[in-house]
Image 1 (tube, rainbow, N blue to C red):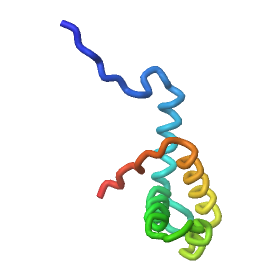
Image 2 (image 1 turned 90 degrees about the vertical axis):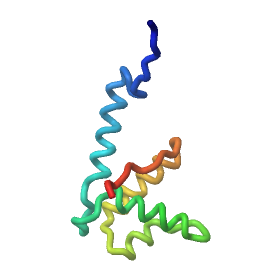
Image 3 (image 1 turned 90 degrees about the horizontal axis):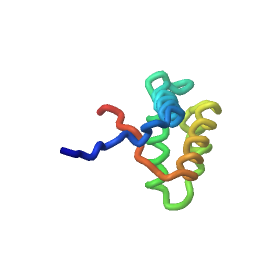
Length: 96
């Protein structure tokens, strides 16, 4: 009897698996000045604000007005840029 094995998309790609693990760990880290927020939480708020905004959202201003440090602003801008360049994928669940 034969069967088709459904493989992991990273099957045989150790580098891809490590990159994904690192990215998920980074998203789960708390951001400066907000111990109760993760980078993932901040990205979700930017995505929500972008969806609600009639025009383009000034992400740097949006985050700065909410008290986020420059490090957080840079990380969010980097993540948004990467998402725009690559195929969009949903953010991982927050566990709610």
